[in-house]
Image (cartoon, rainbow, N blue to C red; front, side, top):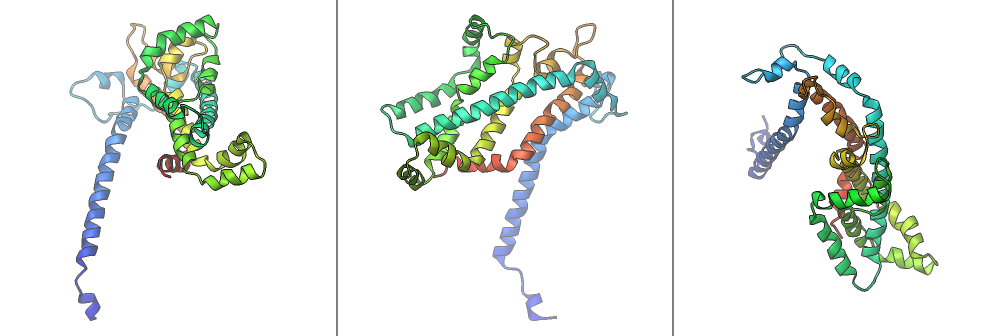
Length: 287
């Protein structure tokens, strides 16, 4: 047995391992806290109505009802509503990402009188609750004849979003000034600089912006319920309103099963774009 093997472990290494163990324990606990509601939703979708109404609560279904997912899928035009949601979400997310990038570029790299004041007003608009603008928004679109169409989401996308503008502004402000100066010397205008230099380098923020905007629209219940008819409505509205029994009570287990299938596209998009999403959120505030 060598002397090296008998040497006690360094106190620093022991402390590092203890801190790492505590960190992992906390992360596992937080992960369980966030996954708990989703796990309960899955279990609810696998139960019978009798188990949901029983007391005390049945945490685990006695007999797993896999057919609840098939019933929830067949009871409504699930694919049709999902198609409507995808159209609205992709159109809005794509347009609002590009428009917010353009506005963020202007606030970050261009000089104009009152720019700081306008930016402050833009950021302050994030404090307005959606309910305050709900009635005026409906009246405007009704006067324009855009109710029961997808045009409201096109206009919302073209008008940009304050939070996404803030993300792009912070990211573009951190890019080297030499890139812009070299392009101007070569004869490029600000539009060319944005499209050919700044936008290609902003893929982390583009990914983050697209995921955020897609999630906003995919999960929106109020605007589609207010502006769209039943045939054009989204999956969020259908899941909340169409799983009803003949007595007018919600069919909770089918609602839960449909909700599990409802979140699958969001999970897939995040898994595909998570690298860019995390990079965009971590670099948008750094110079």
